[in-house]
Length: 137
Image (cartoon, rainbow, N blue to C red; front, side):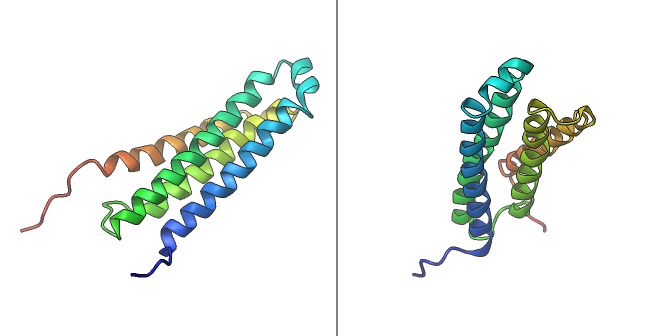
């Protein structure tokens, strides 16, 4: 039995590791280096929300990669789409919140809901896995 990780779970594992590492780093940045600036601007909660969603989806991607690996290509949706949607969602949702909290331009505000939609769409695709596939006659 080969111990090589198939391409899809490898991509999801890489994405999970990148999101996890950057989520911890940005969470620490907000709690330490930017703490005074965030407190002064009243944006500590915004930064914390960004970090929470960032890290939650890193862990979710890790679980998704493990589940997908066990499926050996029998998933009913393209597993790459969950990864793409969650990564895009974190970049748009958490990224725009980080930027806004740090003093970025207010026009970034409308980007946040687009990220939320991407995160929700990824979860909808995960839920799709619970619906049995019809067998064609």
